[in-house]
View: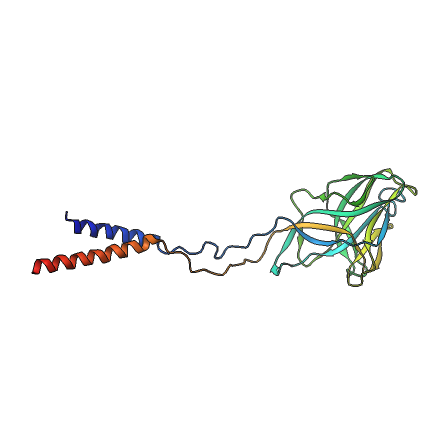
Length: 258
């Protein structure tokens, strides 16, 4: 086989390979944007008041549970979402008097009433956290965590989250805590509640100093802007060889006719 024939065969093979590979599109096109594993569903860092806890002992005694209604957001950074998996919640507490000690648990409820006015829990608890023993404290509790399978909080729905004393080693009129909240910020459109057998409502514009977190479990697909992509040099190489082959054919034909 002549050198020219070999070149033409190689050019044909490279052309077929380059045609199969072709241009490579940007691999980010059409993919969903990554999300954090935990997002704050609701929170408040300010406090100017305290809700008495444990003054009369453990639940169902009065002043043994306090909580807040919260609205589950329906977007994250402008991206629509469907729901959150409830993962954890923490509260801010201080010892008001003595040396109290008791076991606490966070509970999630459906709500009734209007948030920012008279919202309180209704029905049995939808889910409950792992328990914690709390004694001396002056700040945030460790996170109360919720076990798998996580409860799905529907976007746009108002729920109630409580902190309850389920048992006491020392809880009485001389050994009790305060659950911290704010009630002087008129920009807050929320309300706390407390167990007074049955639930009673704190004033409007009141909010616990707390944080509740979860995982977003469904977001609308977000596409990145398309890029022109990359063209492998391999797909250009057969064009060069093909052109070279045509030049050599023309030169050979020209030589034979002279």
